[in-house]
Image 1 (cartoon, rainbow, N blue to C red):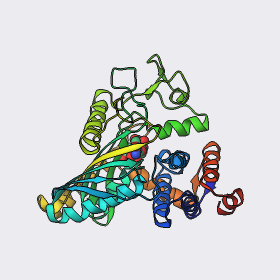
Image 2 (tube, rainbow, N blue to C red):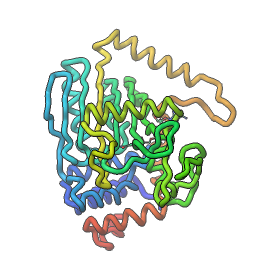
Image 3 (cartoon, helix red, strand yellow):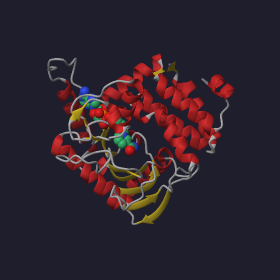
Image 4 (cartoon, protein in one colour):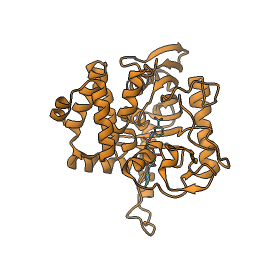
Length: 353
Ligand code: NAD
């Protein structure tokens, strides 16, 4: 199906209100999820709804929890998400960081115990739009690992996202926002739902053999995702685990820590004020000129042009805001079932969509 941004946002808001959230929380989660779809990341959009509803039902996701500062050392803050919606807690924690960085020039915020934070770029963009640089190390726990270390067969970590954002006056910030696994798990889920194969060199089967079959992540005997970029991506994933998890969140993917078939994100976020460094004007002009320099590269065979990080998302947003958001049949069926479980009637679902 193809659905407009407005219709989908309203439907998802009603769904989470029916599930027990306040109007404000439900709308914020809906906007975040739909924006992920608009930006081309269906893996982190409304396809997550069945997981969220399941976790609400069993008490692993609190429908109306908010960020709480539990330690304040000036430029270092620790915020607890109390297992609320990551979209709400993450946004609130970023607001707290943005307020503080005006005084301190740099802020490090540990944001722990969040239910799934969704698209990490959303918090980076929040900083970028306010004129600040941000860096985010995130780990993903609360369930069994899915990613094998470089050179190994068994799963030891998850898709640990990393994000870094650079502001540009009057323009969208430059946004590097990525899973450190060779592929985001949600993209494997979408391929599984559509009955498609995933690219080569991102999954291994239970014997450690490369495979393009996404079902190895969902059906026994289980395989694993690998890290992106061989030992280098693996190294970055380890740092997300240690900085996002061990330092900010206080728990990693080790077997002794909770695994309850839920999704918990811990994030270490640095926010930097360009004014605290050299000249802001110079910084902005170097960023603009370097971006132009990169874009001026002659495209390699098979490429239409060179992009800078964040541009594919802007292109997708421009296209999908006009032509609508595509949702595959299997994902939509799962969302409708979750909407019913949340408390919407079949008539309400039909009327809303
Ligand atoms: P991706 O591989 O599609 O893109 C990664 C980055 O590369 C983006 O910044 C993108 O702008 C850039 N990029 C893509 N193509 C480019 C090109 N041709 N030229 C220049 N730059 C290009 O992203 P992904 O790794 O699949 O991650 C998808 C989303 O999943 C992210 O938003 C991430 O935060 C999210 N995620 C969240 C969690 C979680 O637990 N909350 C876990 C993993 C991933």
